[in-house]
Length: 390
Image (cartoon, rainbow, N blue to C red; front, side, top):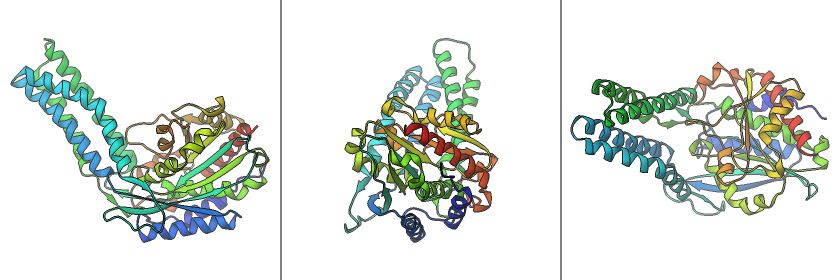
């Protein structure tokens, strides 16, 4: 088995670690560097254009406002009129059911595949996915190795945003539990309910302030993942698995705007992907820390009866790397979701350490990347590919 060159992967990740918000000149320049690296590895590149209307920040604020509206109705109703409180509960129940559908439909309406020659729509952002394909036996598995090459900065780091989501959600459940107990005549003081509501509001207010900027070098998120995909492309033809399998090396953009690039790619190829009997999709997103290695498990029907996420965990044991299962959570979304939403299994491989607090900030620089992280991820990925290609 040809060794995954961790130093080479790190060096390429370092070379593209600079602010590159989707739709900017910096992003287009980095796309060119990724293309040249893949071409230098002997691949022919297809460039698939897409465009989208930025909606993620607005949808977050609208979702928060609609949720707070229901919580406020419950709180005011408990003080003034119990009928208003019951109406607030009914409203929140409908919202919990309808909001995911509404968000999905909104994003669906703001993403479209297009040709590079199409005239850009006013207010829309144009970008492209870079695709390299290998030949192989049609009956063999199809591997898709993927990473996003765009970056963004926000007023909160990724880890801070996830923490606020989780704490606010916990506080909201506490508020609702106290409110329900009060409605069913339990002796829960109104002051306790008011404090719980205040905690929800306190934890949620920073989320209203979130704005997307172009200040993060995006070394970990996700120049590191691109470095891993480019390295997989460089060594693929020397792997024994390449004789038994086909592969797609996919560099997408727009992940930081609601995974728009991966969604556009899945839509374009959904029919062909669903016909694959042994589809194996591996997303690299943040693989350059020297800390723990994690898998965000696939959520969807596994292809060929074998789980990519389980294979990665088992592969870690085979090469002496502990791989943990990291469940998807509110505030943490990666490109694998574009596949699982289309009922295609996909697992995300990542590394984690205390440095994750720098994600989506100007401090996410190449100095945080370590060759040890690339070495561990490379070993795990190659072992899983070898096992799954048999």
